[in-house]
Length: 269
Image 1 (tube, rainbow, N blue to C red):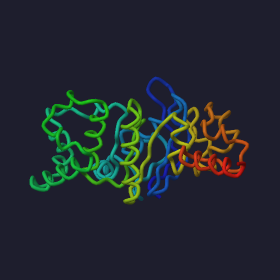
Image 2: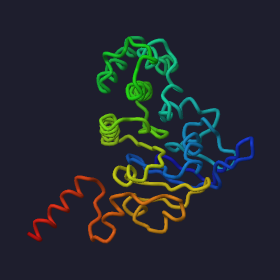
Image 3: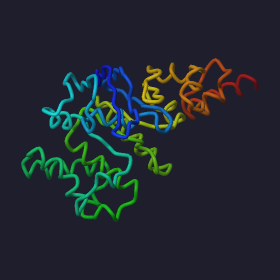
């Protein structure tokens, strides 16, 4: 398991309850969606996964290590965190310096820093941007730079808070392909979202949060075909699931839907 939470609860200073007795196992090498409406506790949960927030009760285990103050450096080396707004992560004068920041903190040799930065810039197709100031970039470019600063350290787990918000159609497809590639290499992707269509199509596993509690978890194909979960979590049904609800086969994406409809058309012709 990549992540284990046991009886984790958290209350903010203003008295608002963020999480209540959360028990959760997240598998390695999967894309796991933390799904819920606004205010359900998604971000609070994610902040526990790299020690931004420490549990007030219960325990958080990352790759068999308890998240504690004494080992936060190593935890954050293993868990890359992408915030919803990349401006919260980008602060250096150039893109190159921003990507280099984490490498500086972990004491890499200068030549290795340069090699890693150029390699990740090539992978993310941002090499022409290395001398730019972050404020000169588009939202999609900023997100790429922010994630470059994470993966340059080669984390095992990448945690993303609403990673697809604000991206246009092409940027969304490109980013999904990028994350798919990392999962194929054995990395674990954990992301928060309120987008049921995206989750239904793309996530391997899903955790449903409501009022800071886990109300269901498991394979996406099983959880998001449970009619009761939408009422309990206040979520709308994915369009594809709703459209094909009465069919034996329930496509998870547009490609599968088109193939299914083509077969029906050919059968009836």
